[in-house]
Image (cartoon, rainbow, N blue to C red; front, side):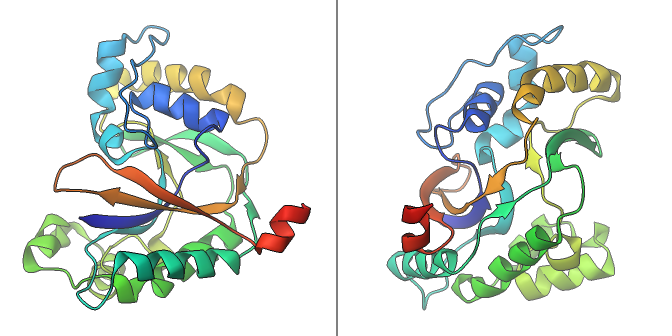
Amino acid sequence: MRYAIFYTPPAHDPLTLAAASWLGRSVFSGDAIEPPSAGRLGMHEIAYYTAVPRRTGFHACLKAPFHLDESASEPVLLRAMMRFAGGLEPITMPKLEVARIGDSYALVPGTVCPSLQRLAAQVVQEFDAFRAPLSEADIERSNPDRLTAAQFANLHRWGYPYVMDEFRFHMALTGSVEPRDFARFETALREHFSPLLAAPIVFSNLALFVEKEPGAPFLVHSLHPMGRVAARRSA
């Protein structure tokens, strides 16, 4: 069993439903969903290029997947998440937009959001005590020879290269896409998601995801609302 602390919108949020349709799987129920035919892209083509993010589900990574340390337990982790989230204030993010990152596509904020960067760093620090140390095999899977000095240091200190100053909020929508298909995918993604991205999104919960066995699809275990309960009730 591995755990991860991610951001994902609530189950019935329109963006969640659109992402489940695009990726072909609900990260809440685990149910398969037939991908749409989008423009000049067939559903089988979409299914092929979304295989990687389909397994991990629609999310933005905050604390990368980890095995629990032998001194920790799931109930203690859940209590810590509830307490931590309750002490945070929701964040209104800049509008998300479809963007290409290398040879893949994701939803990213249109501008840098310092409060989001700070929150991501807080999550990494707060929950690092729950993470079992990386094995040598874990480190090798991270391709350490391809990392920058800062990313290499993050891997050994925090268990993941892309944290702290290396963190970039993104919600993956494809795996690697062939360059000849960039234009078709970008058009299809904009048509599918742009109607839902006109307004800023409120980051208002932390999500605990689980991978029940190696290679299994990730699922939402629980959502932990940000802000004090009394404040949420009166809002």
